[in-house]
Length: 77
Image (cartoon, rainbow, N blue to C red; front, side):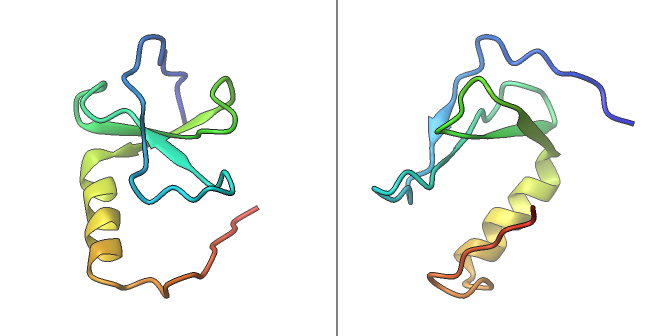
């Protein structure tokens, strides 16, 4: 079961690998202890996904290790 999280005042930072086409994500590192909110930068008033910090760190590590094919786009919806 999920619970709403108030992200008012979150210090959003855009991905350093954002593309000019607007395919960008933003994260609010350190805003919620033990969690990392992630949102679509094109929809700042829209929903955000909140991941456990360890899961987000594992994802970032996998990206840095090249475990995702370069240029591939992953769509889950």
